Length: 287
Image 1 (tube, rainbow, N blue to C red):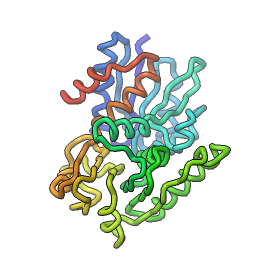
Image 2: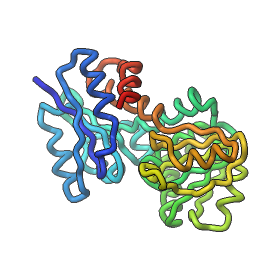
Image 3: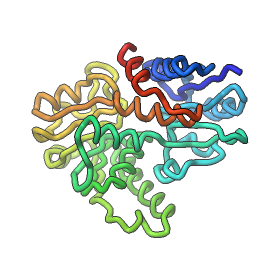
Image 4: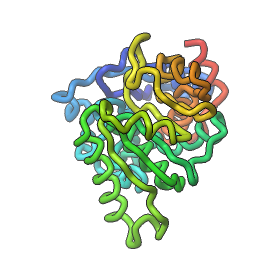
C-alpha cells in the first residue's frame, strides 16, 4: 500500500518538510510521500480524523494547532503530555493516534551540537507563547536553566504559558521536576520597559514566533543582546533578527538543524527505521 504523511497547519506553503521527508522515503525505498495540508482551525478535527485511514502513517503539526490537536488524539507520549503541545502524530499497530513532541529534544541537540551552548545555569529569553515556545520552555527547565524569561506581545499569554507548563509538570510527577530546582521564571510584555535590560543579561535568546519568514519581519528590532551571547531563531532561514543580533556581536543560529532533528525523530516513529540524516540535510539545502 502506498502511504501518506503530511503537515497540518496554517500556513504551510513555506515548509521545506516535504523535500526532507520525500528524499528520505526515496533513499530507503519506502512507498510513501509527504504532503502539506493547509488546515484552518474549523477543519482541524476532520483533518485529524482522516489520519485513521490505513493509507496514512501520521502527520506533523505546526502553528497554530500544536495544543488544539491534543483532544483529538487517543494517547500522548509522556513528554508531549508534560509539554502540553504536539508536533507529531503517529499510529500504533492497533491504529490509535499517538501525539509526540520532537521539538524539545531537537532544540536541545541543536543548541549543544551546533550552537555549542548548554542551558544549565544560564539565563534564557524565549520570544513567543506558541506550542513551539512551550516546547522550548519545557526543554530549558529540564536542562536546568537558571533563569527563564518568556516574552510575548500579550503579557497574559506569556504568564499563562508559564503557569500551565509548571502545573502540567507538577501534576505529571509525584515529586515536582524530580526534585530539581526550578529556574527563576518571569513573563514580560514585548513592548515592556524591562525587556532590553533583561535581554542584555541573557546568554541565549530564542525566537519561537513565526516572525521572520518575510525579510523585514522581526519580533524584536535591533535586540540589545550581549556580544558573544547566542541568538537562536526557530525560523529556518536568515532572518532580520539574526542579522541585527550579529551586528551587535552575538553568535547566531537559524532553525534548520532543529528542523532536521525533529523531522528525523518523527520519521522514525512513522516507519520504525532510523532516518537518513545526511540525505534529509542535503534535501533541505537543495530546497
